[in-house]
Amino acid sequence: MATTKVTKREMFEQIKAQLTDEAQIAFIDHELELLAKKNSYKSDKPTKAQIANQGLKSQIVEIMSAEPNRLFRASEIVKALGNEEISSSKVTAMLTQLKNDGTVTRIEDKRKAYFQIA
Image (cartoon, rainbow, N blue to C red):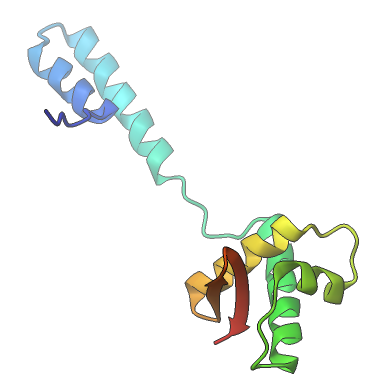
């Protein structure tokens, strides 16, 4: 039996419909306003980490573009970057984002992931 999850907003609306006391209704209205304010706070400005990751992504694409027909593993890209602070898992995350953008393609062979410039 599938049940649908009731959101906080829907729950407040249901409670408000049953109330008659003005103070309680005002409280519920205030809570609904706070929910609307919370949900409207979506910043379009990228964070510092996102800006840094853009630079890393461009370096990865540059490395892969030098040999467009070659299949790269994440560990090979880490070595090509030459930065000891960047881990293989971070490069894999950046490659996954590039794959979702359509910049690179992912190929799996014997449970190993290879990436190639699209």
